[in-house]
Image (cartoon, rainbow over all chains, first blue to last red):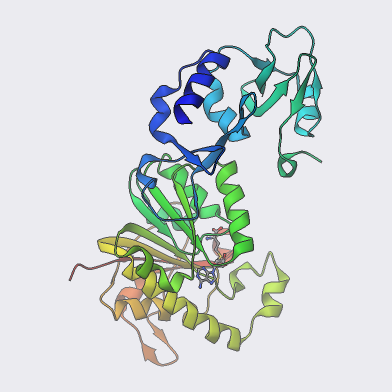
Amino acid sequence: MIEEFISWFKDRFGGDISHLKEFFVVSGEKRIRMVSPESKGINGIIKGIYIAKKVPFGFSLSIEGSQILGKYARRNVVSLDKETALVWMKGEDIPLEGHAVDKGTVIIKYKWIFMGSGYFDGQRVRNYVPGERRLE
Amino acid sequence: MAPPVVLNPRPGELILDLAAAPGSKTTQMSEMMEWRGTIVANDVSPSRINALSSNIQRMGCMNVVINRADGRRIHRIYGEIFDRVLLDAPCSSIGQVRRSWEALKRWNQNLVERISVLQRDLAIAAYKALKPGGLMVYSTCTFDPEENELVVQSLVNRGAEVVKFDIPGLKTREGLVEWEGVKLDDSLAYTRRIYPHLNDTEGFYIALLRKVPI
Ligand SMILES: C[S@@+](CC[C@H](N)C(=O)[O-])C[C@H]1O[C@@H](n2cnc3c(N)ncnc32)[C@H](O)[C@@H]1O
């Protein structure tokens, strides 16, 4: 699944993250986490941080996944203005017109701040910000 | 916060944070280590581990491994492998009284006595989990000597060396070397009491120890 994730990222966002391969580990059936290489062999119940999940149309990125990997993305990144960024962080879907993005996973950002990912269905970006991270 | 600064974990090292939740010091140490090496962040409380794990995630601490165990057994789980250990012990919290009136209402001598037994057992397990030559910080947010100097004295009795340190920019007082007529090791003066009025902070106690190779 790690090779699949690296090549999906390249196809989707045009960025090469293969140099980070030694940090990626598969967790359960669907998740990818980032873990320092030294930590892989150490006993524990949770290791490192969750960055991506396999979904039917590829992968989705967690907020931290977008923050770590977003700088490698060359396309399918949606930059929001401040007002829309706040709407995004409240967990709402964002209608999208005039952005050059393809259907599928997009990375959301405001200025230099990456704010997770969503699914662009051709009209709107479905919001993946998890409930506990949304603004009231 | 001061205890991680005193422990000074370095990138690539193997660190134990024995009573870690909710992780304010774990995340600080993770950054000091530039997210390299490993911190085993242990706690016994499932609900506090939930808070710990969301803080680790939010702060991007990819060099943290969370473990749930009674800290008194930690050396049996991992052996003597850690370069440095932080024991930020559960305590009667009287140093937080300026922030939390509850801390004063909860405080009584019984609590101190009960908790000091737990602290001593945790401190011994933490010390055992160190590599020979490794460093350990013992910290609390309270002032009772039973929870501080007397716990550290029990490690000195097992051969630990108390190490002198300064915290730049922070006014501190020496640890006690006598309590209720009982003389403690002179090196306990190297431990530090940080009273609330000294720096306009909460109050706490910090000791730095080295495991002397046998
Ligand atoms: C002072 S708090 C730690 C604060 C934490 N170091 C921080 O900076 O965020 C003490 C912690 O000790 C934990 N604790 C209590 N008894 C324990 C035991 N037997 N083993 C491990 N952890 C224990 C509590 O659940 C609590 O989270």
